[in-house]
Image 1 (cartoon, rainbow, N blue to C red):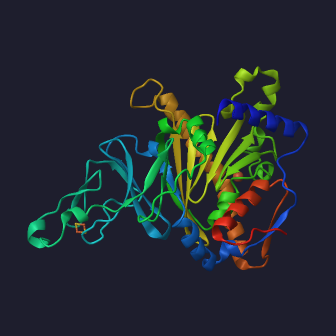
Image 2: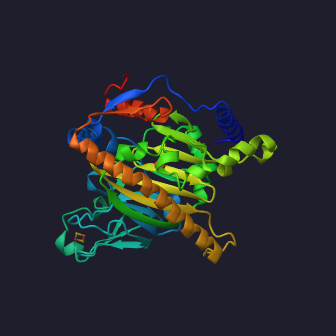
Length: 391
Ligand code: FES
Ligand SMILES: [Fe+2]
């Protein structure tokens, strides 16, 4: 997002507010609840989306130093090991020992190592995924080629601090699959220099799309978030643009109304709005003034999703390795605040899922002002190879 875009988006939001409008689509759309509850649909999502499309698995700032690693599980239990190698490159391997499939590091764990030694028989790999030691290898495995027993690696790319992989290790990421405007948005958020403050994970009883859809409309702010977000935002006002499956959403806050009284040089989107990047499948980025939250969503079944929340923040202001007490206090407050707001959404999401599973009502509606939901559906339908709702 360059300066011209930032100015344009601020102007657009203020004009919409002045007219009492938001970004509309032509008509309300009606959708079947089947896509949220059917395991058959989930199986199709698995083959068409989760294990087929470029997937965002996190930020380079989660493994900032050489040897840093973090392990995550993607759909279908795909065990991933994200490592920063000796050449300072982020690499993504299968967290699976080539001897007899043991897990090299515990799922969800992170730390810093130069060697990954399997807890079963100590086959040992370096940060390049190369098998560098295996006890009594020459005696026990002399007919095997050691060079063919390195860790399985996924094709990955770090785009301005955000890590994408192809979840099929036999396939490459396509060329230019991230539009310049999305990549420059990561740069605008200074994603390359963000550092992990903390993460937490938990499982929700809700379909991943219900959770994602809650993040791309502001219609619910004054109701579901009346005591948390509502006082700071402008009700049902939001704008969005999309590039392929990826969407940038602007959620203007009250200070944006002061833009008219300020010289343009002082307009600052980070202070005037929250910015959301919806990067399905896998990640939603929520940028607030002092931090960036990653909301990772790992679909486990039609009705279950694992969430990993990660708070990323600027490195310590004094240039040292440790944040000051004041910085830590602010980060902790923000970490808990994000969780509180998300919990308001998640509780609704779980009751929606339960209601959908009861089957008593078999359709839902996206209003004209919930236009980002319709775009999300359009993209989803495109990749799933089904007709978008047009009712
Ligand atoms: S399974 Fe890893 S060393 Fe045996
Ligand atoms: Fe919400």
